[in-house]
Image (tube, rainbow over all chains, first blue to last red; front, side, top):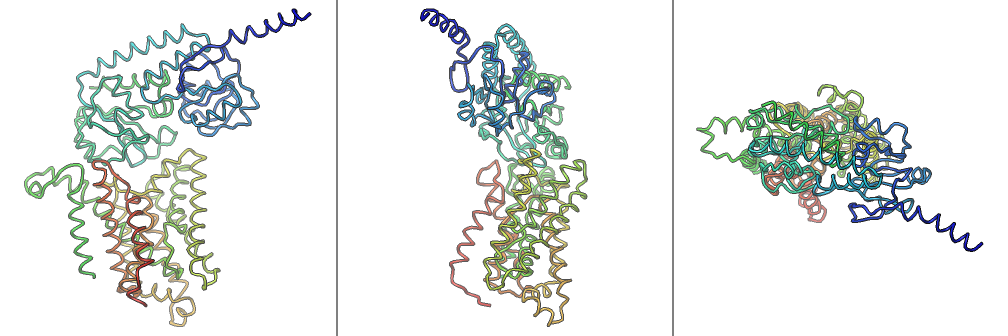
Length: 296
Length: 315
């Protein structure tokens, strides 16, 4: 009898032992359950990459902002916003795994009290970390092959765009917020455009403040970039009262090489701003750059 | 004092014309057409915008202080500025394609409602408690500000709202500040009614005894304040403190005869905001610090000095 119970307990414990895998996260290597049934997602880059793998979340932040992720949101249980989880809703859905990060990073300790929680923040080397997160999702959801092929495709595209921009000169990344503009450097949240594409900065050492450095139009004129990347903050959150092109359409910007040669490349703000590091987001941005360059 | 202020204003304006990311020398102005163009497109508009907003905000602060008979209030912290921001926010939400004129009218209207609400509350407060007015003003402005934040939060427009809540001049270019000339006009018109506002500052019964149409003057003042505040917020954003600190300094040094002191108030406002803007452009060159932040520091120091310095001009 005792032996039978012991054997039964052994049987019960086997799946629990087998169903974990150590994956790379923002907080280091962490043991995560394999093939969790009910997952709650609190990060748009995570949702982006999970959707690319064909993984459907059970609980999801209640507004995803990004049209290409709307389908993934259909039928999910709302569990709060990017910054503020609805803890009762999370608890009620009894998740097997919670994926948080980025804007929800600070909530990870609290979320971890409800269920195993992964901090999948992408910060710093966006491309490398984004691909590492994708690989981790591949391991957790047993889709290594899919993840591998997505990573290969992405790397191919990256080399293609890198080749296309090589020799194009210096680039400047600006974000418009209504009538005002700020600049971002290689160390900032969009810095991977410089790093991954090996594009030199038009202005060295723009500091890596999260919301960029406030600049004037004279700054753009003086920097005189060969390529000007424009991200419209207002478009990212679904408002378009004063568009980025209207803000930049002035005599000072007209005098830059980028404007004269038609190398002002508008990047869809939602993907790069909200889901930066997601595999679909990064691919989309690269596509836009390629398309923008072809206008020459 | 007027001459000294005028000279300072001229010197600072010239300095403002020559401070910027692109280097322009005196000599280049004569020979280089590009330098002249830059002056016309970027530097002159910015300098003009700063001078007008600084002057007009100080004037509107002085008038509001007369209307509520209290030295510790100003439009930007007592509901008018927040009202204007609320108006812009509502227009952005419901009529995103609205022209600047619609925005302007809506912002002026909500600013007016905000200002009128404050006046209505203040008139019920006991006149023996001057600090109560300032406190009520802060709370009242805070409540409207909270409404703005709440609406913005619900619509995920928080960082967009910050554009107006923290005014600065980095976006000013030719073609993007001209509304401010209207502000200058309104502030100029206020000067014509300076005596009436000074009488209103003596209180309701004194005004009526002196034969003033009290209500009409109140409405006129409120209208002027709302338009100045709303248009400034629409074009460059809220610049708090200017309307509070400047009229107090001028009143301390030159007394309360508005006909005499209003031009000084306008010039002092322009000088201080201009100095703040130039500093904001220099400190983190080639990046910028919002003028509100710089003025906040300067204004706080000035205000402390004002509170603790011995009175020189008791009136």
